[in-house]
Image 1 (cartoon, rainbow, N blue to C red):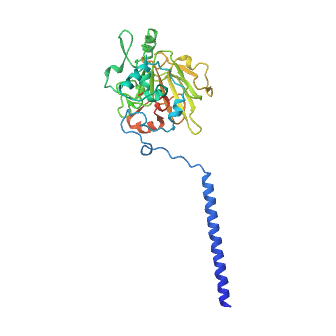
Image 2 (cartoon, helix red, strand yellow):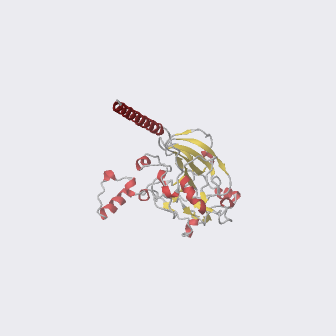
Image 3 (cartoon, rainbow, N blue to C red):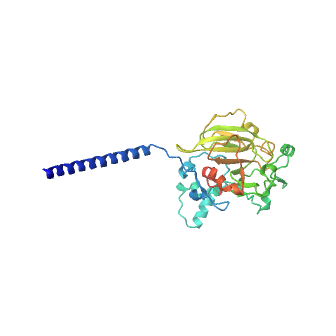
Length: 332
């Protein structure tokens, strides 16, 4: 009798243990299922995770691509500025390929394989101070003037007789431009705070050159930044890059008509003309007329972004203002 009771107790114990195991497994599965539906707070990027280069002026692809822009996406973007093509570039490329015995059929001869500098006619500028000629703008007739005029009155007077070269040029991202930024806007007298690292890309061209939206967007802010060395007339557009990413792009140094008739919240279509390159009286006093193109990961408070940062702020800035070549293409 006692033996039978003992066996019955053992069976009951086993059943209870099995029930406990089933309950534990069910609870674990339920917690796991709930966890899948919770979107974790994304960790803030750090230089160790995303690989911010220690040295400036790195090659295309060396900087963090925080927007995850693929080559295929970039091929579908509309050109922001339509650069002129080099004359007879196809024949030049084919001759170069033939001389190097490279198989390169005409039907796959595209921009990504050749390189933008081999197709489009523009000059790559050097504002590091190593090439002193590039710290001045050479105008038609050989006359040289400073990149930045000292006063607004000088800018207005200069614009009256401004004769720009018809050439296009490109100013680089993450370039230390110690010889260029001389106004108080850049804390030029305080070496520690001095802002010299350029965190956008400049596309230099004649006054009036059209600037296009590379994808659809919405105007975030616009206005006139009047200080000498500032952006002059500027528009910031919120662009949706993909279903999961968007950015805020500053288009700076525009002409006055670029912001007329536009308003915050206005929709911009891919390829639409956002504005035009402004003259020296409109663009903040810069004699080398150009577009400043800057890509931000977060929205600015107003129509402004720091186009240059100090050396001590460089690392954080490169995580906020991504390499514009991910949008514009491999310009250098």
